[in-house]
Image (cartoon, rainbow, N blue to C red; front, side, top):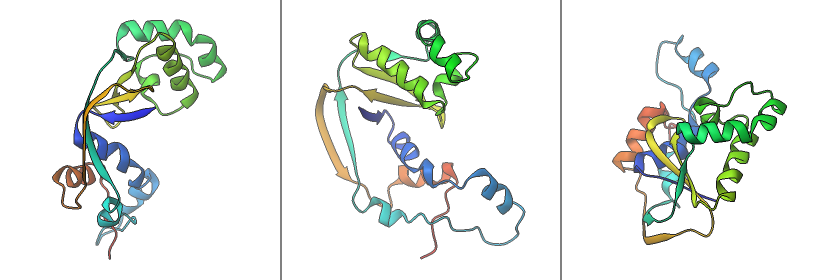
Length: 168
């Protein structure tokens, strides 16, 4: 499986979301006057060995948030959903990171139908379009460049996620 995003900022947001403070920490910080806490994210260190790629992809992809796919998956995944304690299958359940087993089963259904992958909206914002590509990939014109700590999309992602770079 290869994961990709249509927008560069989407790639950054998906990769950097793990650096956000958890909600309890964030709530407690809101009570404190003074400088923001550091959460240990070093942009220079993070980008040191990372590159951003671009390519064109070919194939047929399932839009699993469409009403047709939700209806199909609801019928096919009913037993798994009940076993996992999920009372309904809708777009919000498919977009949730939990239970992961349900989205993995949905992915297998897409794969079994001969499609090349899944197109889906990011759980960090519906305007961010993501892709999960099944092997073998149909990728044309691949290019990559090293990421710079000064990359404007990186900076925007850090801002949107509320990440505070660590003090040096």
